[in-house]
Length: 77
Image 1 (tube, one colour):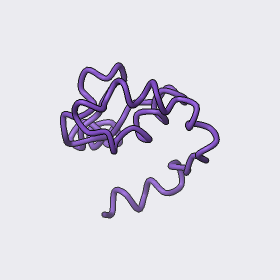
Image 2 (cartoon, helix red, strand yellow):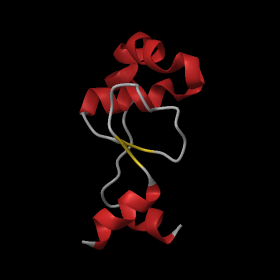
Image 3 (cartoon, helix red, strand yellow):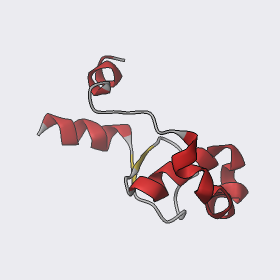
Image 4 (tube, helix red, strand yellow):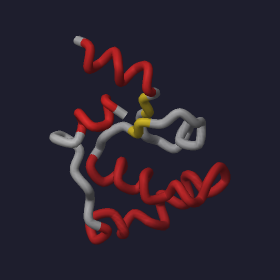
């Protein structure tokens, strides 16, 4: 939780209007694994950033993924 609390200054919420247009494309990419994850994938596609995740639902969805251990290494530098 300490790490997440420190991210508050750089993590910003994204308004639905910015990513809802990617709904169908994101759903096509992730529905087989977990359709509920489409908003995260759509946001990643719109703003061009990787997804921080510990599951494999985003693998093969066309976006980069980072696991917590990789994020920790990044911030440790």
